[in-house]
Image (cartoon, rainbow, N blue to C red; front, side):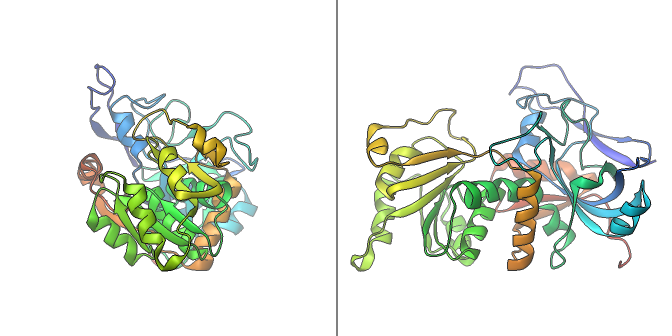
Length: 355
């Protein structure tokens, strides 16, 4: 019987409890006419998975396979057409359902895979049955672990960076909080587009590693007046040091900083608020015509665009570490500490013979 990793619900207050994980056996799925069964090779963690174990994520529930990111090989299909198209192919699994292509937002109820009642399935299991419309061919230049790092983080970064901030060649872009999966994809997408990218981090080592990935430089957000200090770096040579866009996942004082950093009409694309649930939008930002554009994950069509871009530009996702399935707690420990640089991946099964 195939194995799956699920949460074991325990009593306790949200934020105080930490649900343990357990391995269970599940039936081998049989695909319907429009479905395929994928043998999962690697899956990847997102912060939502840690929040779910702390009962801080809406709909978190036990006895449902965890994780939303997955890479694997199609082993069976429910129709001859899908069998011809996908059988034996290495694929990515779309991390959510309910959002196909509308630029404004989901067309119907939006649900993300992994450990929740909203969509009771996940990628941390040996086999998963999904609609054939929800798989995409893996970029061939990537390893299983690198491919598994793509779905949720790359989609979120693509929508924030390329759709909402409309980053293009010659622009100057700031990516805040470098080190997490979304921020790193935002950096890589913007660099590949020909933008000049700067970063912030609480770690000088992470700034240095971002420079290795193509960033021009960066500053510590822990420093007082970090925005003014960043502007001094970018204003050398008598040229304007103003930015065209900020890609932000922290919130907090981002708009206050944006007033200093952004050109008139500049854009802040916000994909999260880890610092706090509110952002102050002061009058100087209004007078400067700064736009703040909220950005949640993204559509299936945008994921397809992101995967094509990763393939064409030969972008290699940053993987912090890879953990075996029996040692999945080690993966969560890395995330809890928060020192990771890149995605944390779990090897669910070993790679099969060459296709």
